[in-house]
Length: 393
Ligand SMILES: [Zn+2]
Ligand SMILES: [Zn+2]
Figure: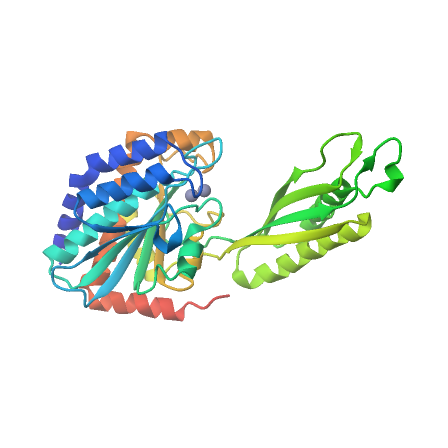
């Protein structure tokens, strides 16, 4: 069965490869930032509609999200598999995270499994989730909150990086905005009458720097002052910091959160300012399924003959899905050069023919893993057991 599965998946993705390349280049050449991915979303929806799939746009009330669905010709009474496509770009460096490739890998896996359902006469459903704003506000978290993923038995996505892996344990990540409010005054005539909100931001950043000595190895803190004052001759009445904290495990996130919140309060107290903290979104750590991950890695190893990578770092909103659903976030090597994500060089590499080939191969591999869940009951039971046994730390 796996042989014919491989054939159906391989042929379906190869047939779509030229179209996928066009979509990938169009998205790459028109980088759109989080929640502004109108063209990318439209392109993908139009393509899926042209192939006869039903597509719901603005899924979960997010303007650039969508869900495409296909039910097997053998009926819906089976597993419901889902794939995620991302398509948001980064400021200044465009597709420096290769989300144009994630977009087409999701489409490729969706097309392949839709075909498997029909050709192999397996009852079930496959859905493609167009998930915006991974790099900024966590589109998947908002879609999850709106119930868009409900009913899924398995969720998968792929991401390019400097190596391949089927077991990415990503970091939890919490972003916040801190505002300090003071009192303006002439910086030379009456500085003593002012309350310096810019100083509060500086004090906060200094204590945060000192705190780093006592962070665990898998914790990260990083941020920028986005507003420190308006003019050198005015004591600033307002300042603003954007800050992110990350931990390897969700159980540590609250500890680190409390520490930095104490520091932001201390800076207000020290300078006589008031302050306000707005917590924006929390990405949870990604908890992949070992059975799915091992099969994916074995298939990738056959092609690349190098071991999978571990300890990739970074965070994803897919992590939040992994806490709720059986899932696989597979990584694939972009060009074998070790270039890190979020760089201009990575953006260039995400446009090459070689990157396309590697995306196609990774999509075939992951689709084969998904397809096996549909046709091999023993394998699916192992996957479910691995999911139930994994405990959140
Ligand atoms: Zn990224
Ligand atoms: Zn990314």
